[in-house]
Image 1 (cartoon, one colour):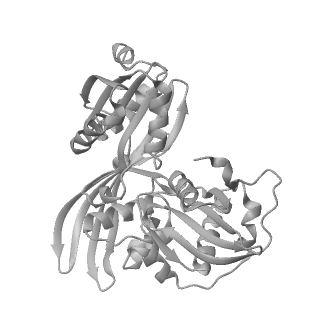
Image 2 (cartoon, rainbow, N blue to C red):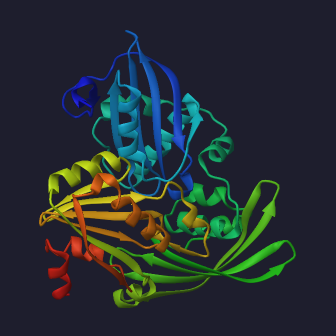
Image 3 (cartoon, rainbow, N blue to C red):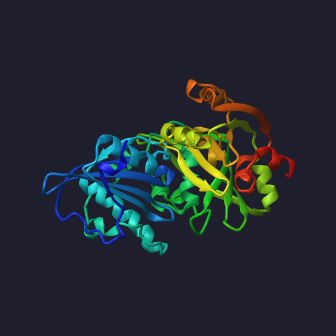
Length: 388
């Protein structure tokens, strides 16, 4: 597909915003409980052209941190931008109104202001929306943009994510009483990297759990031990009780031990570095891509956030696989799941890779190793292993 057949307006380059346009429809991902959503707004210009705006909205720290726009793009063009900006969020798109779209944009913009985060490029194309003050039914919108809570583990994991991320509105949505709403494990937005949930006892209609949360403090790590009570209500599962029992800082070595889990790695050699990159570009449109000095890194995410439903939550539990194509004609593939490993072996033994890839090795490590290789400066995985 020739990308020059449509126009992408990224802003910041002196391009004027499209003058007048009529709202057509809008969609948002149902991932608000992860702290981030993707949003698409479709407009029609006064001369009858289609105009699409794409937003990446972070409600913890960065606010409106991603924007693209497209004039007269085909569905394929729209899908490409959607995949690149929102493909890793793991949710489904739900339809929302114009007022709800503007409300979300304004709520996200408040995070920019609060944290002194600059707006992304292209602000001149949507700044007029930030001047509105729409009246909406917040509860109705929250139910649209949040996936259904199906078990206690899912509720507790989301609750801890929102609390640790200092996302008070997200925390409030999951709570039943004021005590849980005032639960403050941190004094600023931080990251929950692991959460372990064990049931303690039941008392009447409330199930109580012991929760051990591992927090990334940016410059260190902290363990937070707390008790959380869950109750079934007419509005679904809600947090009815939350209390912190203990907090303790731990060393990076202790944190690494806490995060220990097996990683499965496949190493292939390739005869055509560029051809392999082109195949992955085309075949993994939703994967995030990063260019490193020694190669190209692709991170492919699961199509859902089911990892949140487990009693042990990991921040990287939403990753399906990681692919690193090195400048030494090597492909390193990593996953944390045996089931995914089987799928990956089958995928790379497919017809498109015949004559292009040759398996060189398969490894199982006790601790994640591939990212260490990516940032090591080595171009060959075996040279890296010999010097670890």
